[in-house]
Amino acid sequence: MHRPLPEGSVIKTCTISKKADGWYAALSLEVPATTMPVHKGEAVGVDVGLTSFVALSNGETVPAPKFLRKAERRIKRAQRVLSRRKKGSKRRAKQRKRVARLHCQIAHKRNDFQWKLATDLARQFSLIAVEDLNVRGMVRNHRLAKSISDAAWSAFLRTKLDHAVVKTGSMIVYVNARNTTKTCSICGWIWESMTLGDRVFQCEKCGLVLDRDVNAAKNILNLGVRADSPELTLGETRTSAFRYRRKVSPVVEPRTVPESASYVT
Image 1 (cartoon, rainbow, N blue to C red):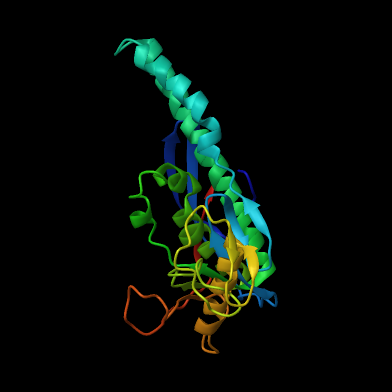
Image 2: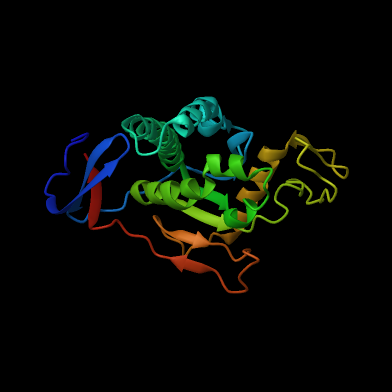
């Protein structure tokens, strides 16, 4: 066990699985209902990117770890050795396991980084506004597909961060991502000709000069605060009304502390 089981919990199921680096046992537990904590932190906007993994509306940035890019040379070398091994031989089977372990190490590093970052954000802020990204459509750009897949935005925003806010009692709001980077966070002027190469936002109307990712995070926060309402309670997730792909009223999905949880040994 990598951590003790919660007090009063009852083991219901145990799932055994095998991965490239060993065997795992996942336990499904039934735990007593707990009271949702009250979070009294500030609100923040979060913009995800490739240069900076996240940029916050308060000016803080977290550089992208790029685990796949850093291990790419080792993976290529291991795969070249694998391609030279005779099919059906023991040496090929042994090399195949080495390649699988490299990919498994990258996945573990990425998950560890994202879980720690999501937990830190959920503990520090009471309301987290993020973009409602269509990552599946973004990876169709073949020039950026590998970097976007390496960043794993969907896993961070829709799985880890969404799970972390439930535990801490904070809220997460998904807003429309359209023009959040091109719009001035002060006056609302839109830089129509802005490209990916323009890393600094310069407003021709009010003179604002700011990092493009931080400016986008401020716009995301403004949309998130507008989407928030008194009806939204702690531990809930809201899809903003500004989500342009759905012409519907805001959808509030109540979130409660689950009665069962999974622990991996």
